[in-house]
Length: 328
Image 1 (tube, one colour):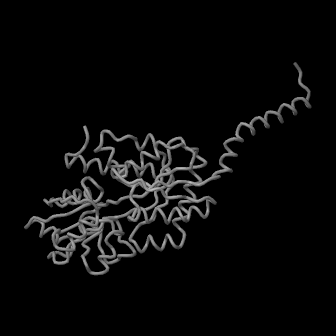
Image 2 (image 1 turned 90 degrees about the horizontal axis):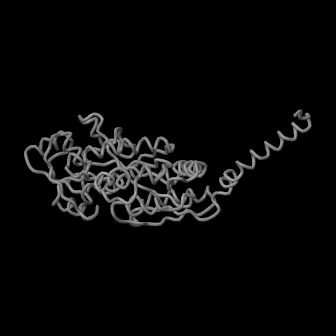
């Protein structure tokens, strides 16, 4: 059947309208987002180092998103309770997690009953910051650098404390033990502060703690810093050598903070959250706090975060297996 040029033109216009209509719901949804309050779940109690940074990020994102980002603390089970709450939330962009290493790259290897799978149930948004670990010692320990510490540890039994077992802090100590061929005695505590009290009191020799947790004590001269687990020195602690440069090239551990949403969240929403979170990192108040606390800002793409999580899982899995704590 022969179709006139006018009819053909009409058909093409109609087809174009249908194509636009098919794509409209997704476009309209992305344009309308966010239309209500957003919940940031922090899987730790209020007042801790992770919570403080999460609240700074949430406050900045609230300004640019045009909706309040409310922090909801869901502490417990090394971050698993909060991560699971996000994994089971609606994938609409109104609930996301400010998660850390434990819930994403450690617990999957030590808890066979973990109610969520990080790679299946959560979608990456952006890698926010890294909290690197400082080796800190009691002031009267007769060692002031890595070499002196190792020599001392080979002559006498030294202890190191951490907030619980199989946490990033504990596993950093285990990784250092393996790298240096040492036999350090691990002492688990119920929280950072109890361990710090014993270190300050001379009842504990060492800790592997995030810089943000111990920097004020170091600056006040209440404990001494030996080295840090970042690959490069921190601008806020320029005189503190890295473990890598002290003779262990490639040594690096950190507790990463990252934003994840429920799997199935629309890509346009993920892109919006990623852009706003990265912008928040550059806000003067946030950037100043990051530098002062000895943190490292990242601000990755979702794909880069997914790759980082895979590498983190590989590192911690090896350490966990070495401690004999991996699940069957």
